[in-house]
Length: 70
Image 1 (cartoon, rainbow, N blue to C red):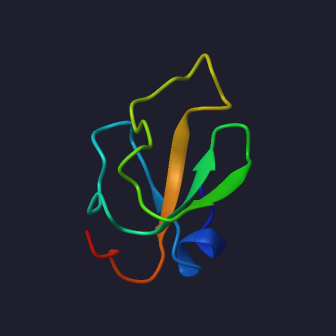
Image 2 (cartoon, rainbow, N blue to C red):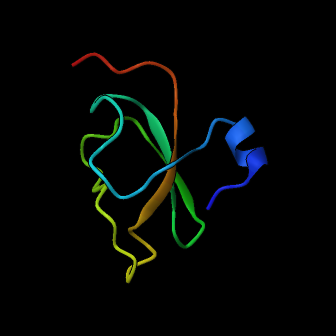
């Protein structure tokens, strides 16, 4: 779960459904283990829930910039 402060910073909770943004959108993700990573686009990320694998389970995301040209 993300805090109100994180929401104010642009983080959006992710419920484990399909990719919630354009496949070419730059994005920063937060995994269940608390680590974050920035990706130039979201097309290769696996957005499905993996509660047993905290290192791959995306629980929040923050869109960055505009979608890259494809």
